[in-house]
Amino acid sequence: MVPVKERDRAKERLAPLLSPALRQELVLAMLEDVLAALGAAAGLAGLMVVTLDPGARRIARGFRARIVEDGARDGHTGAVTAAAGLLAAEGRAGMLTVPGDIPLVTADEVDRVVAAHRAAPSFTIVPSHDEGGSNAILLSPPDAVPLRFGVDSFFPHLRAAEAQGIRPTVVRLPGIALDIDNPEDLAAFARHPSQTRTRAFLADNAMLGPSPLAPARLRESLRNDR
Image 1: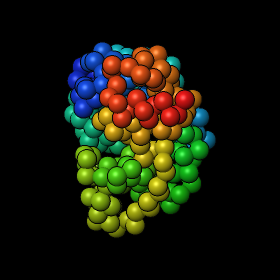
Image 2: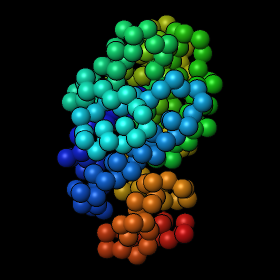
Image 3: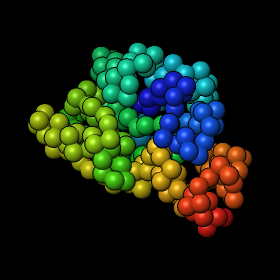
Image 4: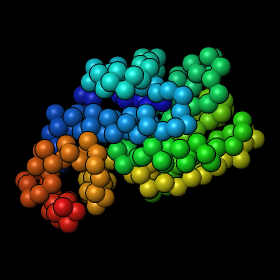
């Protein structure tokens, strides 16, 4: 399950690098990478995207994802909570939720999360690279633990699982860990060569070489990876 908010104010912390239009296109490029990895994973029964955004809906349809609108305007937490309630009501065994801005995620990483997951009731989590955020959570059943996302959600999520009597499983994976929110994240992404739509987007928009769009530290990181 991937929540995608409407893109009119997407990735504002990347404003020093990208115009609003380019930031909106970046969101779609990253979503495409995330859905491609999820779709290629062996351990998932299907894909769900919670969104009202037309571009995100178009990409989701391309991956045959189920598109849900409930909770789409209620922020990341609201979207995930609504999806968890829906899947629990349908009797689904579990839910894996990831954000749409982790373009280095791979199908192998997704399968490693599934493989680490214990029998229900269970809770598996992959933290962000700074161990602040929660970049992947797998729950069985889907509503096993109340979730609340934010920049410092990782340790509160561990405590929330323990409060439900569930011992959390923590898996650290570099692709899932790197979410792109600010220029430093984008520079970190640039240091990892990849065959992703996101990297192609950066190349297409003059971000993979000397460019007035990119600050010096990002240009240097990108040049070093070519």
